[in-house]
Length: 426
Ligand code: HAM
Image 1: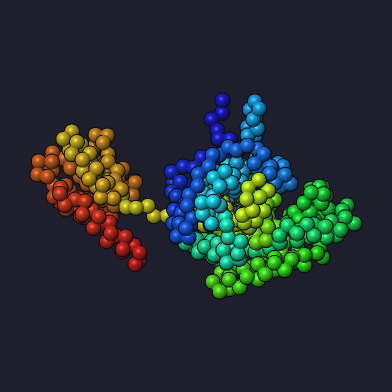
Image 2: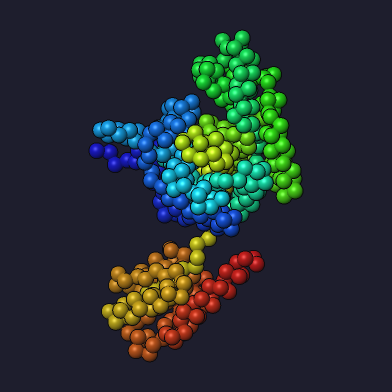
């Protein structure tokens, strides 16, 4: 048996986990200030949920589902979070409880793709879904939140790529126009695009195949099929973005790969880091018809999801500071027992503590403290236990002082606060 993780599914070791945690905590803090609350749903759903929402014509449902076949059950690992949230919204009759519902989620998603940099079979999304507000200001507020969040994460030059897909009426009309346009030149399209011509000709517009890109030259623009209501929504969105100073770029070819979108759709593409301009770090849009199409109420919705791995790639190898570490090094059995209690008191005061209880020599303990990057080493032996003091060794300044046991938490916190203020001003 080979002890290897499944292709395209990664172990995330502690150092990398810290980078994930940092992004997740900025995400949480940001979306909570906008009123989103966390929803946790199972990783597994009925396959039909994804077929009916993510969409029969989407690549995700057609080719990338991880299926779990059981007797009389057809289950699948979730490839995205929007369908599960919609299921919960409908099941809980949220529209009867509150006019506007705002949820966020963070977790693994599964798509059987060909793995490459930034594209995995298990990856992590942090996303939001907002139900009950049809207006364009709600879209603008969400887009602005994304730009603010990207900046807080350290992404340089975050810009929203934006488009409108119109409502159902406009898209029906536009589909017809696209079929008329592509039908006579069908033979010049890729095999994939030829298939799409039948079920979802919009997808041809975002094909990466050079044959399709050439064929798209001069294709009709969706904008010309918009209804007056669609146009009013779009104009309202742009005006609000201008007012907020949110950077955006209109991309009339942006159609997104999932079937449920209506009107506003958007992506954020990283312009820096190891991911290059390969993939979107975030995608989303409005889906005003999805809940109804699943048998729920006619409630409009909008949402997005960001790929955590892609954000980390876009950020590159930035160093993230962990909170300062205090290393406790006891010598001898009495000191070891005392050190347990000391570590407990320090942690209760909010200090990150590593207690070395192995009973090793002082030299070996201090070597470990240095390797772990500890700022302070607290040394205590038999004498210190008797006199209730601790030797506090500053491993950066190379100083050593005796501190009464009772003063320790405040002394350690004082040193850490001063050190972090110095780092910030440096
Ligand atoms: P999506 O565009 O399919 O949208 O995925 C959102 C983000 O997930 C992508 O921009 C990308 O960063 C990340 N992602 C997707 N597939 C992979 C992969 N194989 N490996 C690594 N990262 C990946 C959705 O999933 C929608 N549910 C977003 C949404 C929410 N729309 C409305 N509400």
